[in-house]
Length: 232
Ligand code: SF4
Ligand code: SF4
Ligand code: FES
Image 1 (tube, rainbow, N blue to C red):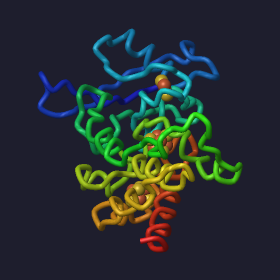
Image 2: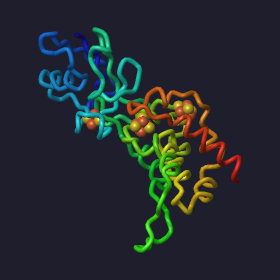
Image 3: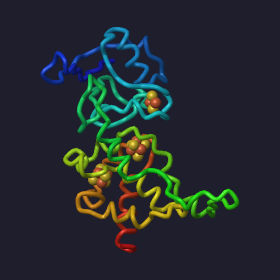
Image 4: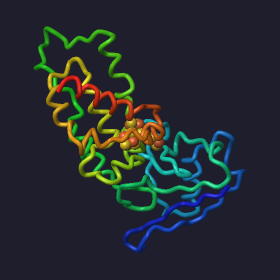
């Protein structure tokens, strides 16, 4: 199996370049994941850099571009990928080294949508109750693991990462806008109602296509737009 991996060390390289590695099929099993292959390649080339932690699709640290699509290496089976696999860092953000990107702008945009509940002051006598219907509106949003696969596949985010929140942050924004316990609903909508913000999304759907958790940020953004039109 052949792996063409983008390498870049900002201390020694002018620009990223590709390096090819080979693994023998005997080193892999039928259920090997791409991350398993990367660990074997790193035994050949210890300077190869990539992130990983949980190895189970939970921490969101090992997003990378695999044969042109953003994916998590730990939940991507080698059997899906063919005999030649091309790996690049997630696009659109600065490269720190090899497959590791600088996620600072991604987190800045996430933080800017205030991804936390702003409820009435806690009253220990009365919980913030929700009906099952109210609770069900949060499904499909709280499961986000902040891997960045969506935002780094979004052309609107590539071109304006300092202005456009991007699909991951907007999915989080929608999660709190529809939360029946949140009292900053209208303030949240006003902050997102701008041509450089929510309305920068062109619904190309790259984000939804890229999400390894099967979430639908594009639909969440459409919902946000509809709520704004009705309520502002
Ligand atoms: S649907 Fe919107 S947020 Fe998703 S990739 Fe397209 S422009 Fe970006
Ligand atoms: S919405 Fe999906 S792709 Fe985007 S950050 Fe969350 S888990 Fe990753
Ligand atoms: S290593 Fe945690 S999601 Fe892949």
